[in-house]
Amino acid sequence: MTSYSKSKTLFSRAQQSIPGGVNSPVRAFNSVGGTPVFFKSAKGAYLYDEDNNKYIDFINSWGPMILGHANPKVVEAVKKQAEKSFSFGAPTELEIELAELIISMVPGLEMIRMVNSGTEACMSAIRLARGYTGKNKIIKFAGNYHGHADSFLIKAGSGAITLGTPNSPGVTPGTAADTLLANYNDFESVKTIVNDNINEIAAIILEPVAGNMGCIPPVEGFLENLRKLCDQHGILLIFDEVMTGFRLAPGGAQELFGVQADLITFGKVIGGGMPVGAFGGKRKIFEHLAPNGPVYQAGTLSGNPLAMVSGIATLSELKNNPEIYKNIANTTEKIEIGLREVFHNRQFPYQINRLGSMISVHFTENPVIDFESAQKGDVPQFKSFFHGMLDHGVYLPPSAYESWFIGNAISNDDVNHTIEVADRITVNWKY
Ligand SMILES: *Cc1c(COP(=O)(O)O)cnc(C)c1O
Image (tube, rainbow, N blue to C red):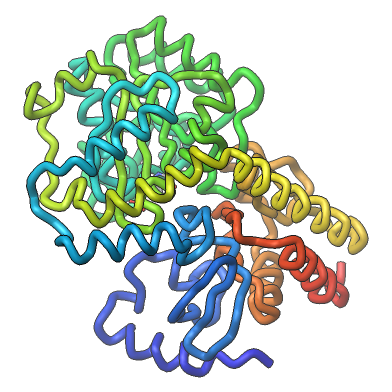
């Protein structure tokens, strides 16, 4: 039996001083039960917890550790910068370097502003969209996550799907009224909302490949149709590429699908594990942002040199070695094929969605294409799967609503081990 005794002790202690014992809710294992694992170090594909258990990491800090943990080039860059100061609150050449690097990788990008998280990036992007268009409402999709700013913590109301209600106490009905909800992969639902709110919508924001209800790729034509609709109505299209950026391709989902958004938000991979986010787009839109324009946005630690060097080292590695993308997609495909074989042999219903190095498993017989179908997954079965894998050294996201993120350090042996474990833990499941 794997021992989690130190993690258990730490979790009890954490709950005394930190709400729920964690600094971000999904870490608390509420969806799967049990005690969150407390980590002390990681190298390459492996995590080591406080009880000295070793795990293959399929979260990779929710994406940022795409090169593997403690990549020597990234570590060296951060060490060197640490001796020269962590932060000036004043401009540095490093910020230009990262901005230029990102612009060289992402199609259509002309300007970019650094922030400290994906939440900040998305919050700032919709403010800029509103300031630029002079309109107030935004459309988001049920099951897409854009961070925890008020405007995004909106769920479908009990009546019409389009009318949002606050998803959390503390979000005002006034704020909720400006966020309209559509169904992912359902272009008609978007058209209806746009037609009911002519000249009121500033932006449509979406994850071009959803990763926060498991992995859900867009159906054919979905992104293209949104692009056309936005052009017809003077609405800005915002791709939230916090997950997909620098992961699906050097230029993210825009490159992969050949569809360009007006504003793009980044996070996760962009900082290589440091707290970095960014939002970018066309120059004519960014002229409206402070200090050049009236739309205000700021940050004391935005673009701080420590974060910049980590981002530069990570993105340079990705840009200079495009075979990394082939490698992580191949690794993920092997995981998909292996799991399909295991689940097929066990004869229980399952869905595996995958695009490139994003993959997720839902235990349901229906295809998972939107939030409603994602909710049909068998929760107890996912819990058993998660804990079985965990006890055998495979660290998966502790929720069926999260995509797995495959990193470049994961080897064939790691994949084989993972499939063997899946086979072993499901052998006695009864259906
Ligand atoms: C993680 C995530 C965010 C929020 O980023 P934080 O850095 O956690 O604030 C926003 N959008 C998407 C698509 C994400 O996956």
